Image (cartoon, rainbow over all chains, first blue to last red; front, side, top):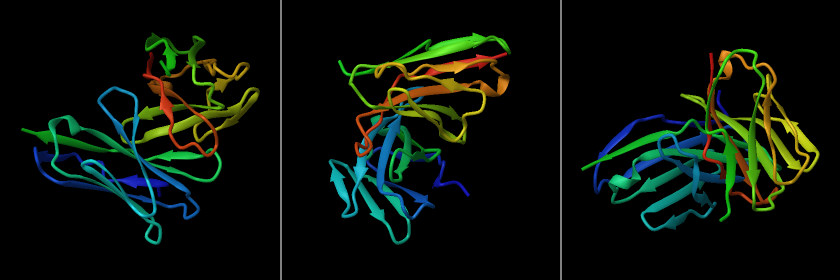
Length: 109
Length: 113
């Protein structure tokens, strides 16, 4: 079993749609959680950190469920520019950072 | 401008010909790491370094070497490249153990024939 698992998609949604991605992790001792965005053939960039209480940044909402060991990302009012691969990232204590394989999103006009 | 710089960005080489991919960061970060990205597998860590002269294996270190003689540089060395090392490589840096965000270089696409 992979340490961090994501649905690879692709998710094909129309502009304006709401889309949600989930991610599960296997190490219950994991401490920090993030969503990164990666455009085609580009480097990953931090989208947002994920906090236990849940957090929102504009159209993006991230939530963490420690009991069930999953993380979610909700994108509201999807834009064409949201088309990318979204990487779930889990950091255990110390320096170990595990990346999910990513979920591809295509937003269409 | 704060950045992580990798070179070369693209390289085609042949089996057994030693090569080095350089990585440099200008943010005075302690932590640096190398990843490879393959379709369906995501980013997998090759080696990481917590500080100068401190390096450790990641999940897929076989066939690779690294060094950290200076804080800003963390080169990745392929002593005898093989076709299964054809991949997209990313170097990343982070400020410290408890600092979450990783800053990535633009990537180096390596093809080994």
